Amino acid sequence: MQVITPGGCGNSPRSQFTVELFEQWVLGNADPWLPWLTKDFVWWRAGEGITQGPQNVTRMFPGFEAEHAEIGSVITHGRFASCDGFLLGAGVRLDFSHVLRFTGAGKTANIAQVRSYLIESSAERPAPR
Image (tube, rainbow, N blue to C red; front, side, top):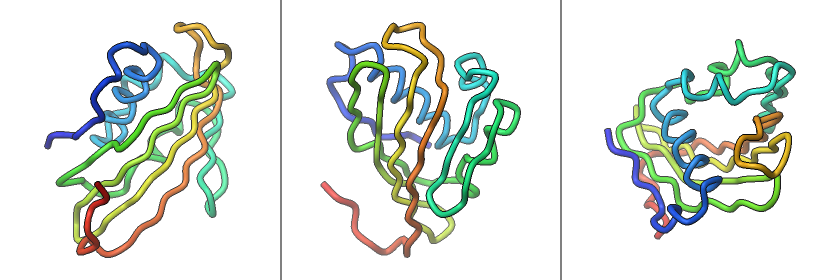
């Protein structure tokens, strides 16, 4: 499956990094995430609470295999990054928005927290453009 990503992220290392991480989130692959998470990492999902520790990161991954995925936008500033988009698969559309907080603004800073907002709906809903 191909993940459609926004163009123009090449000039910002943090933007490109964020796109690459969430491509792996879509694919259900935690391995690229693990070296970047702090030992007290927290992933908070609206309506569901938190998951703590890098060893539990896959609990916050999509619970189905996506057939199509798009990352619509990526925004970075200082020690924050965010991205949004949607996944389609198993008759479901999952719209998402994630906000990452890094330990610092440098390009080697680790991820301390992710806040996620997910809305599941019928797959028939048209994709935003």
